[in-house]
Length: 124
Image 1: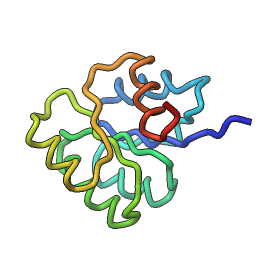
Image 2: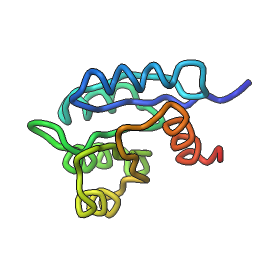
Image 3: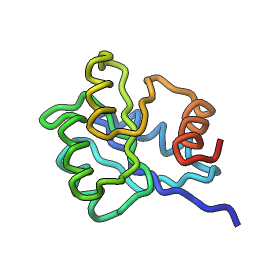
């Protein structure tokens, strides 16, 4: 049986969250849950303990870098990948320095997302 990887998606856009959930259907990745802001994301992470977090960089109130720090405080080896259409290279580098495993630029296709996630967990 194929191992499934549980994904927590964090984005302030309902459209992006819906898209990620749709794209994961029928793959080895399961949509474990979502959050629309950083504070909720940290709570959801602690409760759900997902295998992967897709974390938007630019969100109101608490952005991706601060949320990343808080998730890594809960689990220093958490697999967190940043997603964004707005962030500049400096913010992406900062997130990688803080402990993010990778970065995916929005918009992304279904195949692009699945390939990215497979690389992230060592399936490709």
